Every structure is written in C-alpha cells, then in structure tokens.
Length: 325
Length: 311
Image 1: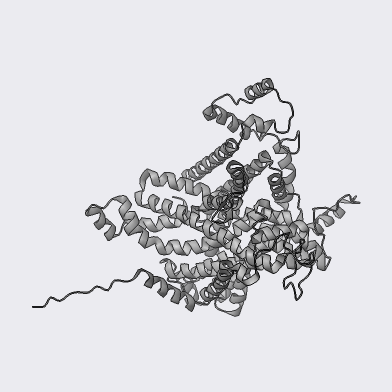
Image 2 (image 1 turned 90 degrees about the vertical axis):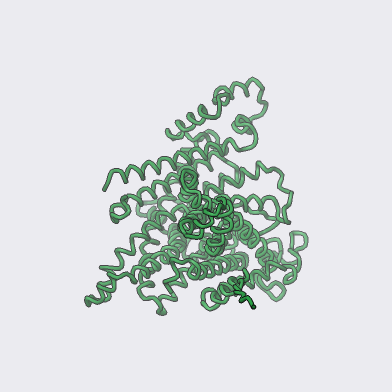
C-alpha cells in the first residue's frame, strides 16, 4: 500500500484529534464564572491572596492563546486530565481508568455478536429479496433500528429479570459475594452480562442488517453476478464467492463510520442495567455537573472513534485498491 | 391578422408536491408511514381535545402506580397521573422538539452544503474539513457536555419561547448544531453536479451574482433532496432528544416521551413490573422513528436520482 495514502489518513486523524482537544479546551473556558472559582468550588473562606496565588499557580494570568492552550495540550498528551470535582483527590484519568474495562467487555462482545448476526441476517434477506423471509427479516430490522437501546433494555429487564427471574437486574457482579474459584467469578459475570449484552447486540443488529441488505441487493444487480449465474454456478456459490465479498466492503466501512453514533446508545444501556462502565460514569458526572470527568469521557470516546475510523480506512485501503489514490 | 400566442402552462409550485404525495401513497412503506404520522400529528396538534389538559402532581386523581383499568386505560404513574394523558401530551412535546431541531439542522446543513459546493475553492476545503470533523465526532457525547454548559450560560430557565421552556430550547439548539454534517455533505455533492449544468452557466453569463444563482437556480434543484433528508433527520432528532432526556437532561415540567421513560427508570418501573409506565411512551417513540424512516426512505427512492433505478 502506498505510503502517501497511509500518511494522508494519519495526518487527517491527527488534525481531527487536535481539533477535539481544542473543543475540549474551549468548552472549559465557556463555562460561566472564572476558572479559579470553579477550581475552588466548595472551599470556604478563600482570601483574595489565595485567589491570586492560585491564578499564578494554574497559569491563569497567561494569555489564553497560545500559552494556556499549549500547556493544556501538553497536559492532555501526558494523560493529565485534571481532578474530579466529585471524587475528591482522584484524578480524572484514575476515575475513568476504572470504568474502561466493563465498557470494553460489554461493547466489544456486543459489536462482534451484532456484526456477525446482522451481516448474516442482512445478506440472507437481500439474497431472498421479495420473499416472506425478506419481509419478516427486514421488518424486524426496521423495528429494532427504530427502538432506542435503553427502551429495549427496559423491556428485556421486565421480561427476563422481573417476570421470569432468569437474570439479575443490575450490576456486573453480585455485591459482597466471595468466590470459591475464578470459574465461579466468571459464571457470575456471565450471568450479569447476558441481558446487557443481548440489548446491545439486538440494538445494533437492525442497523447492520439494513446496511448489509441494501449492499447485497446492489451487488446482485452487477454484471459479474449475472455472468457467474450464466456460467451455471450454483446459487450458493454465486452468493459466497461473488456477491458477498464485494458487498462486505462498503458495509464494513459504514460500520466504522457509524461507531460514533452507536456510542449514544451504548451510554444508555449501561444506565438501565447499572453496568459500571463509561456510560454510567458519564451520566453520574452529568448529574453532579462533574465537568472534568465528563470532558475526559468525551475526549476518550472521540479519540477512540477517530482511531477506529483510521483503522477502517487503512483496512479498506488494503482490501480495495481503488480508494488508494 | 392574428398573432398566435404560445401559452406555456405554468406549473403551480405545489402541483409537484401533490404528485409526489400520490406516488408516496402508492408505496406500502410510504402509506404506512404517512398513516402513522397523520395520527400522531392530530394528537400533537390538539392533545387537550383528546385527553383533557395535562395532569400535574396537583391535578392528578388516580391511585399511585396502578395497572390499566377502566378509569385509567393505560394505568398511572407514581404520582397518580394518567399515563394516557401524559403520553398524548408527550407526543406534542417530542414532535415539536423534533420539528424545530430538524429545521435548524437542515437549515445549517443546506446553507453550508450549497455555499461550499457552489463557491468551491478554499472556502469549500475549510467548510468540508469542519463537516468531516462533525461527522466523525460522537456528537451525542458532545451534546451531553454542551447542554448543561449552555444551560448554565443562559441562566435561569423559567423563560419560554413559543410556549417551550428554555431547558428544552437549549436541547433543540444543541441537537441542531451537532447533527447538520451529513445533510451538508449530501447537499454539497448535489450542488457540485448542478453547478456544471448549462443553465447555471447561462445565468452567470448574463450577469447573475453568486447569491442569486444559489437562491434561484441551485436551491430549487436541491430542494427535493433537502425534503427527503429532513424527513430522515426528524427521526434522528426525536431519537437524540429521547436519549438526552433519558440521561436526565429533559424537563419534568414539559415531559416528552424520553422524560417519561427517564421517570419510569428512576422509579424502577421494569423492576416493579410496571410495564404500563414505559410501554406507552416507548411505543410512541418506536412508531415515530419507524414512520419517519419509512417515509424518508420511500421519498429518497423517489427523489434521489441515484437511487431511482432500484425498485
């Protein structure tokens, strides 16, 4: 693959990340009240002297641009995102760090499941276009696509936890339980994970299936598919050998592009199930107006999305030489 | 001697719209979508006509959190308010927020798309850079931070605009300024192809300025695309508002569907088995998004020249 293609994509991603940091920097300065008042929030009896000393120490007397921004950039690059307003004495990085694991587990697995099921369902619907299978499959996909993730979660919670009592209603592990073996812990985790995971996967399946279906339908009208049929290939071979590989490409890139949009749903599923991940953290921070934590979550999620897009671009470039221009 | 007058029939501007509606109704997806929208529009225009004035904690008459009965067809919430009443009034609030947010989104997107596509050059490069930034950004998370900050900036939230409380106006504006990017992209690419057409050259040759050409020649040719896009945007705006309300950014005094769902979660309705608390507003949301998606994609098929080929 051409180095120029890679370089251009990487530079574009770097500029985007820089812009995200700039937005984050500006947001903090948009807030009403001077920064030192926000930093000293809740501290009683602050003398004028202390205020001046604090302004000096935090560099608030320097011009906002470029001095303060450059310092901010340096701090962000080294992972220093400031301190949480609520969890006193804890850095934002530490607060966020505890929450990354659960979110990765839930959404990593959810994405994989949804991509597998969604693409298979969409490909099959598109292949059987116009039949009863297509109508039912596409109808289910459309309804799932129209349902907010948290609503799906509430419905599943009602049926499977409250009604049937199959699964626990909240959390990642049973509180206060002591595990005899790591296997026990894993079983308890799987027990708690099932419903949130089902919600995330079902929520995503609709979207991916719709994308895949239209991609397959478009591919099936291409000349090379007609040629393959004319050559007397079996239906199954036409689908797996000719239509699928070509239909997969645009779908994979759309999946990456939609990642940012998916995060919106992600946040709410965690809230419904009290899953101790980044989404629940963001909502807690929002309720308590813990802006540093909220901005930290925003920074982390945006940069992840940009990097995921970069990865998709590079992979796409590998698979389809036409885009490498 | 008689002069033969050549009469060119002038098409009334709305003839096209009626024709389009006719074609839309012929498609099952379009028909179902339009029917749902018609009912919901009726509910949101006159909610008081159907279920009486909105019930508050003071005017509530029912028992607390009771399942559906003859008196309360959809049950009651934890304050004894009728869920039927709340859901119907929520229709209006959700739809109005969706409508205004869509207008803002499409306005920003169309202006940026047309200007960027028509003017081109460095301006185009800068505008598209910004558009790409908004496209890749998880805009929902940005909206999550922007909403409380702007609310703090605006200050006391008792003021009303068009009968909508300031808290909701902030949500509307935030949705508008974070979700215009895809509209701008689509309109720009269409503008690029229109710019090369002969009638635009002709207008330029007889001395028309850029603003005039964009308004009188480009806009009428992208308006179809704008309409189709607006319908799809509406579905997204309702979903975004619902999600923002669900995480606690709604207004309890003007409860939208999302706000009702948030209240249901806070009370623990799924854990209590109180399905009637979240099923009615939930069904409302699914119906609205489904209807707009159906109409939007049917319109897209009809209007988007690139997709017209596929049945």
